[in-house]
Length: 345
Image (cartoon, rainbow, N blue to C red; front, top):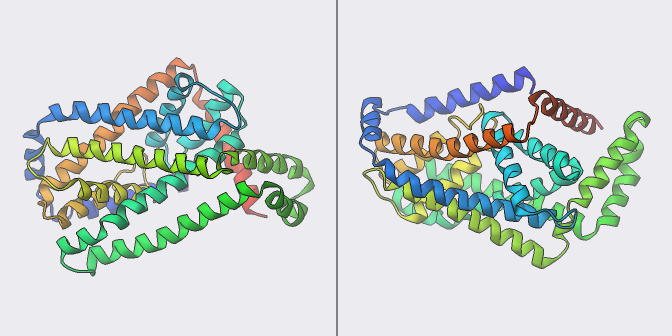
């Protein structure tokens, strides 16, 4: 990653950390952490890895038109990818996941990246569903549509339109591959420099191949259903961690928190979503009447419980696969360079 991108992420995270910690008594928050019952983290980690296995199955399902790969083979690859998201900025773990799949199973990076983009779109749709479904309850608790609730409503509307447009574009490209590729060959390909034309066309065709799993309503339904299960399981993790602290909100409130914080983590930030996860999480709990000190201690512990286990396991698999950071960085730079060339035309 270019240094300026990293610096911008750090600045954004610093702003969100400041927003998160405003008005919080840090001593009281620390005392709340000390008095928490951390035995509840054991079932929370267990249910989180159930969600990871569901992610593995979903990716395997999306990759079936390209190659049939066992769940046992794919689990370490998915974990390595999420580890990369946690320690690299800008979700570079997605490229890392595609690179490792290419190395182990010889699946083209462009095609596997298409399936990963599909995952992200369905995740966004489910997250927005969580937010919209629970907005009436938040409005009732917070006492109106202005301020925090009003901002969430505006983001939900804009986000829904954006994700719906992206999903529609991918579905049309998947259902009409020859026509959509024909438009690319007719209008975009002639604009590409001769030196990179064949390579870019190959990448685009490979990317289109990765959309094959969206060519039937049954496949679309299965991917959507799996995405709902994944995020419900992650909400169960939120629920388990809540029991470690001295407050209680409904499962639906935690669904709303899950949706908002994960949408917020799409904002560029420092590695590990520092600040962009914490500030909106604290704000949601505060809107439900949880004291700022306890909301902050809970959100920080939850953040660590989400980040640490899969990062450690990902580093273990990373070492076990004898992967090289220098080679991976070269692959990431190559992909970023190709993206930059495409953006220029």
